[in-house]
Length: 401
Image (cartoon, rainbow, N blue to C red; front, side, top):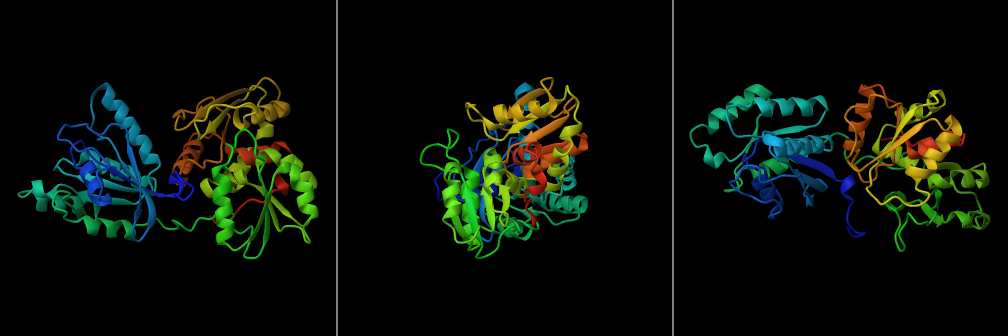
């Protein structure tokens, strides 16, 4: 990804779901105007989900997800269906393809998406191959779902523009209106970014939350300054007035809090992403439960990245160290990375998630919902560090998402 690309995690995720050979890959190619997915008459050609980032007129940056057939069979088939189910958690909008009079599986998937408030577009696919029963299938889908399906033929190009228009029409409410900084700063405010450039920030690059936050502040017409932690004191001394807001890396909370002017509000990139990606109130409430955890608590650290662990890694070293200082050496801390996340959270007392910059909001919220359903508190890195340092009540939480 170049610096000019929109990060995949901030794009609308549109998933294609259906049986094997229902025309998902052909439809994806027709929608994108490119051969991005392999098309074959052999059932089960698509294995792992295929993610294609593109610009869609009327919406902007999106990601299409081409998934394996949810009727796949055998040991490998079960693994493929598992990948399809995982992709569903990140899906902001779903297209469910109908191509047969037996609609049991398709209707179950529609119900699944509707339970999670995911907009669904029913699609009668490959209409060119259904000359005798196409009208009956369209009527049956409409009767079962109460909505008119979009009828398409990727081969003939039928219905492709109508499908694009339906995607625009069903754009999830609030999409693209989310804000990283929320109401914490306004046009003309001076915002100071404290960005330590350590081993976790490759030379010549800023980490993604810093880049995205900086871009939003520029769009808001804020006045933006930046410095590293060791330059904080001279930077503050050079200012005529204190910054309205200071945004720091959570790992530097202690240092920045000790030096910040009384008039400046303080938050961190991770705290901002707690609101941008997840449920900020649930995260804050969960962090405050840390003091009540047992001395043998089992805590799960969930990282979105699959990076190689580094010395003084925030999730694997720094946060566990702070937790042990608070709760004692008897706690157990496990770490998961990427999309590895246990379905059964039995025995886990607390989940601490990273900022989630590599995941879209829908996927992070699916993990929040999973924790809520299983009665497990869930918070994030920045909120946790602020609580463990005793400054959570002095840290600004973003609102407006």
